[in-house]
Image (cartoon, rainbow over the protein chains, first blue to last red):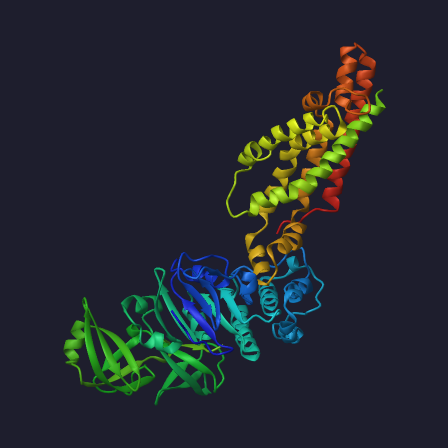
Length: 344
Length: 204
């Protein structure tokens, strides 16, 4: 596969456990050697089996962060952060100027004398990130680095890392099987299943247009819609999706102006022939039936309501509503059924 | 009391340990980190042992037997597993991700070994040192075979005791034995207590 990743952007390598994501990451890092093929980064060839080229990890100018922080336990925080710096060439060293800036943005004291052994999980991840970024790598490789953290710490770190990569203009590859993490952090996404990359593209495209059923299954059944919070009042958010507005129950404080993905499961979309003003659902979207697919006793009705949305209904309901492609209907969605993932 | 023999044994044990430290670290490094996995016992059986024969012949040809140097070479080979095994076991127990993290930070394999593996292997190094020292101090058969029994040159303390027993001089034998016991005990006890207090490596 070949992907263009803009400076400061993140490529998500997404897929279920055992899909081969970590293997690919280790081969990019130079820790494992593929049997055949090529690995290129920009104008650099890191591996070419035909030409017999193999660059060891030391020559690839990468930063690497594992699931476990893997800090050097016999060194202090400062020594860990500076560990790779003196090996950077002079040209790179000029880029190392922002070492203290990197550390500060990650909330790490760059002259911390404490032993790396005494850190909490979140602190250790921050030091591991600072250590990987301090020598000024051209590519940062992240292997589910936040998986073992509690949710608030994870959310904060995702945000800090994304902001830092933007600031430094450093590209990154993030391995994850967590779709929320993929959405929160990714710009581009490659979906891997059974050791093969099945789809590559901007992250919203992959979610809204899975290339095949296996990709769709691995991404989950939800519609994922790029959206923006426009207003907030009384625990109810107003979210702009395409030309439409959705009302969404506010589960976590999300200020207006926040870019989000709105996720809607097909099971949670109901179809009405005419709007019932007194129904409990907050969202009633005029829609047109685009297609109907039979999935056993359930029918999958694809709707166009300014964006593509699937609804799962029983065959009986479909027959009672006399649904057919082209029919004008109302898609009803409860405000509590829309799940928002803020972009980190 | 055969002070000369005891002094010789201590010298031999010290020299053997020093040589094993110099030889054992690269050997253990090679065993643990060489790309081809090589069984330790295979290495000991095939690697050093066939050179032993050749080295021994060469030594014999140059008239080295019955010298301290000849004894040292034999002693090093004899005690090698006692140094290399703890070294390599400790090297192998260092989390591999630490090495990979170091390599990805641009640090060469040898520098990574010096900056990460060795500092994290102090416990194994001390164990190897103590074991080879103690093993050499008490060795008998190899010394008798290779070294003989020349006072001040190859007569170690264990051979001195054996001699005394042969000569029915039980008093001298028991004195020397007690001394050897005390020396061994003091060395081992002090090394282990030092290791516990100063070099203890907290497990994480």
